[in-house]
Amino acid sequence: MKVALGVTGGVAAYKAAELVRRLQQERLDVQVVMTRSATEFVTPLTFAALTGNKIITGMFEQESGGPANIESAIEHIAIAQRIHLLLVAPATANTIARFAGGIADDFLSTLYLATTAPVIVAPAMNVNMWNHPATQENLTRLRARGVRVVEPDEGYLACGMTGPGRLASLDAILQAVREVLGLRHDLDGETVLVTAGPTFEDIDPVRYIGNRSSGRMGYALADAAARRGAKVILVSGPTHLDAPDGVERVDVRSAEEMRRAVLDRAPKCSVVIKAAAVADFRPAAPQSKKIRRGKEPLKLELEPTADILAELVKMKNGLVLVGFAAETGSVAEKARAKLREKGVDILVANDVTQEGAGFDGETNVVTVFTRGGGEVSLPKLTKAEVADRVLDEVVRLRRHPK
Image (tube, rainbow, N blue to C red; front, side):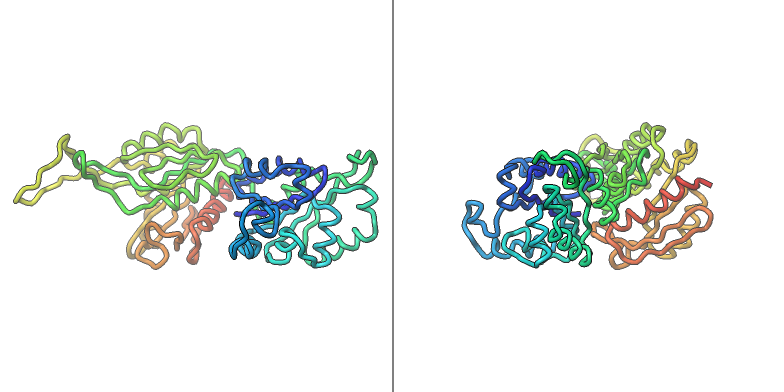
């Protein structure tokens, strides 16, 4: 998710740097927009270093030192369409007044008018400015439009006065962000192991047996679990994907390497999600040298690989086990049978021939089967959305294991 953080001109602007870090810990991508006055308190370079994003300080590029062009002229519209939240912290009395009056005379106020995303403001100002009827009327108008106001704290202010007006605690601001964006920390204290991607089984030094798994579903699960507070271990087969931030990644190639990696780490975990497409068979006698082309057909003998899920069931001991099944035809029937045979808690099944549910796509269409006969068919969703729905079931089982 992308958040635009508006930083306005006040002493509390320095706290926005720590707020950026806290937002990033929530796995949010932060785009900082500074008013000209804010740059007098904190340099744009500080936020650029923290976010890795360009910091916007003016309506047009020439205000920031570059040439004006059509892209810069409509940048506020582009950002307004991309963000999931506009957060202004600290919000001065002047910025609040401009928002309330619909005045768009800089990038931040124009962004406020252009976005349809939720808006949170965290005011910070002198106590008399806070108490002034004009400020309170402006805040009333903003609240009536659906703007979330994080009330300032009381205490000693930079101006030497005491009273309300000090920027709310970062914890209070983060709590408002979580509530508005629907962020959850319901996996705090859990250690979740996720497997992802394909495995490659060597035929000879240049050839292998593989499958079409991209790893996207497993990586989405790892990202979602980390976002919800879990410590995450991602055991990944070969894939071009980057591991989500804060996730421990273990790279493997073959089914046997994945088996060892999973069984070594599972005893320290509370949840194991087997989303990888592990090869069911491997060459019985892989060759140490390249097999030369011949005129006769090549016969390749295959042997079954170890059943990692079956081994995990034997060592279960309170572990929540989630399996995935990519099927073709009679998916529900096969999934119910697999759920019984494997002894897992949750089985996520899909028909890979169905539109939107195949390999290497951004979406999936699955049915979630749970022990006890639960069955939920999900419509076509992004893999990130599917991941959260699966984790909802994991949380339910962790809270109500029986």
